Amino acid sequence: MGACGGRHPEDDQGVIATCASIGAISVAPYYSFKAIPGLREIASLRGVYGVTDAYVPSTGYADQRYLAVAVLPLVSIIENYRTGLVHRLTMQNSRVREGLALAGFTTPSHPEGYCRMTVDIHTGRADLLANPDTELYTVSYSLASPAQKVVLTLTDSGGVERYRAEQTSCPAGIGRFGIPYGAIAKRGYTARLLIDSRADKTLKI
Image (tube, rainbow, N blue to C red; front, top):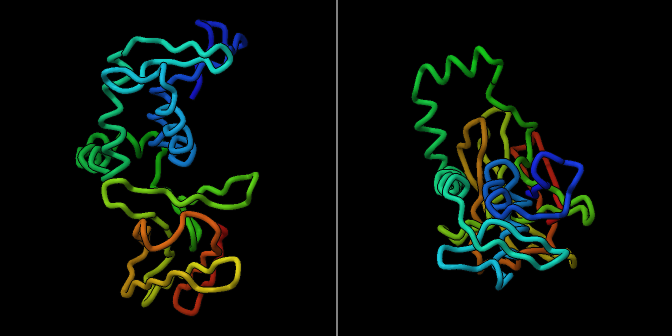
């Protein structure tokens, strides 16, 4: 999410490349969502078309340019994070699929339970990712095989259950619970995921 001086990576001046911070949604959404609100709060970075190209925290310098080659891909990156549209369209091309197979790429597999939930190494808690389009917090899970019922509960520090939802006839693969913004506070829970009678997973949020 940063940049260095020209061809000298050892000359790291702490420059934050704003497009890299936003574009990282595709590979590191947890950290990207941590960075984006902070960028928006820096008055010198805000311009007619959003945040400008770069910022140096140590000096307060903010570039006033917009680089099209960096900004334009963000539209497709964000849309792919929101809906998976770009990935779906790309994978419809048989040559793309064949090329990926020849290069050794395979569909990722996840252990049964929580997935795509990044745990902060300092707090030991996962952060609920918000979807501004649906106004839902997302909790993702993986199933190794179909399940008759998957139940998610959120319990506060006092042991009181604050949220409960269940899904039935769940296929193998990735599933998601969407929790409305107003249903809970964002932090301070123990999430419990019950998958039929075969799995009982907990996670600090």
